[in-house]
Amino acid sequence: MSVIDEVKQRADIVDIVGQYAKLTKSGRTFRGLCPFHSEKHPSFFVYPEQQSWHCFGACNTGGDVFSFVMKKQGIDFGEALRQLAQRAGVALPSRFEPGVESEERQRLYQINQAAALYFHNLLNSPAGEKAKSYVTERGFSAQTISDFQLGYSPNSWEGLKQYLMERGYTESELLTAGLIIEPEGKKTHDRFRNKLMFPISDARGRIIGFGARVLDDSLPKYINSPQTPVFDKSGSLYGINLAKDAIRQQDQAVIVEGYMDVITAHQNGFSNVVASMGTSVTEKQVSTLKRLTKNITLALDADAAGEEAMLRGVGFENTLGAEVKVIILPQGKDPDDVIKQDAKTWQKLLEEALPVVDYTFNMVASELDLTTAKGKSLAVDKLLPIIAEIKDPIRQAHYLQKLAQLLKVSEHSLEAALARIRPRQVRGRAEEPKPEAATYLHPLLSSPLEEYCLALLLQHPELKVKDEGLLPEYFENSENREIFIAWQQSDKIELVKEKLAPAIHEHLDSLLNKNLSSTKIEQKYAECALRLREKFLRSLATKIEAVLALEAQSGGKAADLAKLKEQGVEVNIQLGEVFAQKSRKRLEQRSRTL
Image 1 (cartoon, one colour):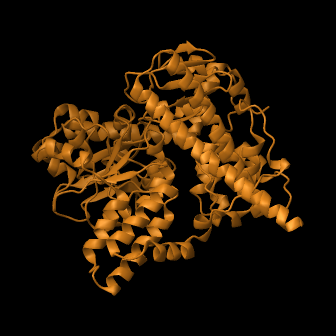
Image 2 (cartoon, helix red, strand yellow):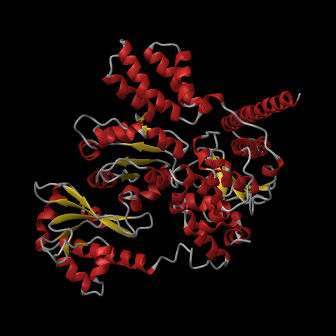
């Protein structure tokens, strides 16, 4: 038994969830108000026998004890494992215990914290008067300056270097942390000089790097720490440490571009705002936010970088499994300007945010003459590939209809063009599973069906382009779900391990080394994907039926009952599609044997 399985076996999901929500026993389950969103009528259920949970309300999602702790605390799998192992009295091997950072990383966090304190203290010194005047003129309060630990780097070549070395840190460590520079053939010196400093923290509040703004008209206006063992600009979000609780409570995250946007938003009560720090939003950043919410709104300047992020919005939606929205900012304004001028305007913009695909349609349509054949052709070239990327078949059909209406062309012609882009998505091939992929054990420990499917994907890179509609929620075990998500986000199998917590590496290796038959790989993958979908839908249907029975007995509200029934109908429709696919396959197999 692996350490992960041992933790699962010892963890009591009722006790753990009970720390965050008051649970009441209802038959063989427990129910309570969902700890992830506000509600007056309980829609959150815990299933002790399966050691799982599900919210039938606004969240409409569920998982195991690991996924609950990850979602509730906004942490990754490794940190959730550490906490649950400690609670269960299970010793984690030091090689992958996430709570035990390498000595180098611990030192880097300490160095960054010491540097932040140094910069922050200097902001209130005579040397930092210009920087202090700047933040005061921007309207930042003393509390805001303290919350964000704003600081000032002196106009000195070695001020920080000397300060940190006097406290026992080595020149080599300062270079690794990116706090000093070593020009070729010259003496090392401070990287940040005469700048307003913005410490950048991770979700756990550890300072991982710095942003800096010039105090004159020199360029570039902003610079950041370089890539270090603890800082990756493309995967970091400014303000996440201060925003994570509000994001969970409001079930929404707003992504802006700059430090000032975040600080102004927080000071004015919009505490669910984070920044991509001037770069285009990345999959890594979206994945970080996914642990806190599926509802993401982009508020980016309408420049080239902003447009690129919008055009990649469907990829973000596929990562989230939810719709991404876009705030349309007034011309020449950024969030900082809008909020300072009138906070109510910002609130209205949030409420009127458009789905990212609708925004993209509007953006493309505004640039083309859609009364001409050339304009229509260009619109199809730009928009059809985006529609093809949408995994949800209902949403894809919606936007295909919208494009046909926009261009005043037949939907059939667009369907034909879509089929050429993603033929498998349109034709929807799926087959009945073979026995070797069908057996599975109690979900408390392992799921051979999930593992078989993952082993196929990991060992056969050619399956990457085969879209069988497999979704992360089909994987009940969090470690399997984490591996599938990492596989989705990696262009090469070699990169999957880099995206995973060290605790999952052993499980990943076992899947990579699993003995598999080398015949009919595509067929077996299609079978697995269909079986996993069926298993997920059957489980969900059973849970909905049980909840409906309880609601009926307890005299539940008509609106809640209607919503649950609607969910049940949708699940049964999807199950019907699965059964139809299986029937078609059986007929095909019989015809081949005749």
